[in-house]
Image 1 (cartoon, rainbow, N blue to C red):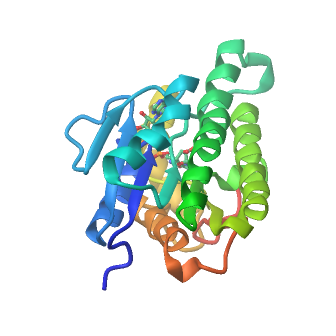
Image 2: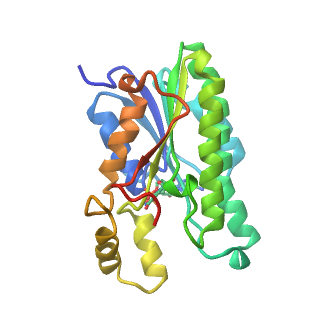
Length: 244
Ligand code: NAD
């Protein structure tokens, strides 16, 4: 028996590095998956919904829309995220609105809309992609760090508040992952991504930064019944490197 047979899932940021791996993993184990991103392109999924998570109305309506299309909603993965770089003196109002909008407000809206649907059906699982930087700050990314700390706090709050309804809320907290988000960071600084990743690999006790599947496997565990006694948990997935 596959872990997600009969389950209906919604994954945000589905066209990104970690999102693609989560979608592929859920579908490989029997879930029907609705994917959302600004452009889902030709992503393989049971439902593809393009949209902007900065649009509050889009977020508010999305869980209901997915439940209607798939016949229910058992799993929500709030995976989309943006990273804004630079210390606070260089942070613009637009950086703040973008970072808090995508990383905090959208998951808040999606959880708010999804939880009553899940509760009415007897329960469900929400997995948020936070960050190890939401547990302990890394340098020179204050907006990103505070947004991920807020998402971690939201996870802990909702995990406790909705346990009685059978809705579990947990977060996976990666350190560096080999995705477009990480690679563009090197490119923006004029560095070669391959050389940058080789340097980062040497800094990780397990010998390499994460591949998207390393994170997806833990997200799938949290979404599955194997994690039935976990809620409000913030799970570091860092190869033994807490913060870098
Ligand atoms: P990614 O850039 O490959 O994917 C992020 C996805 O989110 C993209 O497909 C993007 O289009 C989508 N997205 C961003 N803004 C959106 C918006 N307004 N509306 C709709 N979709 C939007 O990055 P990733 O590395 O796969 O990141 C996934 C998650 O993992 C993020 O929450 C990120 O903060 C977190 N994370 C990543 C790393 C890392 O090193 N890559 C480390 C820790 C945490």
